[in-house]
Length: 171
Image (cartoon, rainbow, N blue to C red):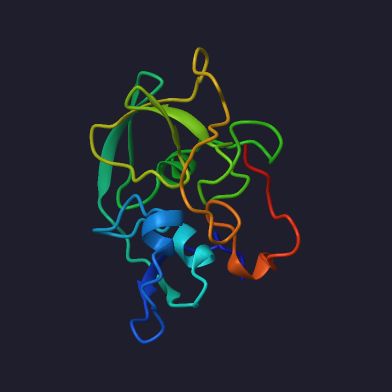
């Protein structure tokens, strides 16, 4: 299944959830009150307690992108909203891109409300100010910590980790 062929939200299957904390400590949800479909928690859950459900259409919101007022879908990520408005992210390897789509690589970083932030996991909201130029913001990759990396790295799918081979290196 292509993750972005349709919009999805994540639903928690309480019978499978072990309350291990991955969704709260490792792949931290940026929209816990209302899922925006970034799917980071879905890919990171080691107990397969997350399932995808089709998303209902949301209302439109207004954002300012590079000084231009745009009307975009609400209830989605900044990346999804900008894509809907015609913004094209680059292919992985050229930034800004949607390389991992789970917030781990920072390739989608844009200036959102004056701060360098990941477009793929940040919920869009009415009145938001976005700049696609990250000039003057260094570093372009954010090395952060100390946060636990129970599944290899931010939102690395649990099935990719065998605890014997490296999934990613962190400094």
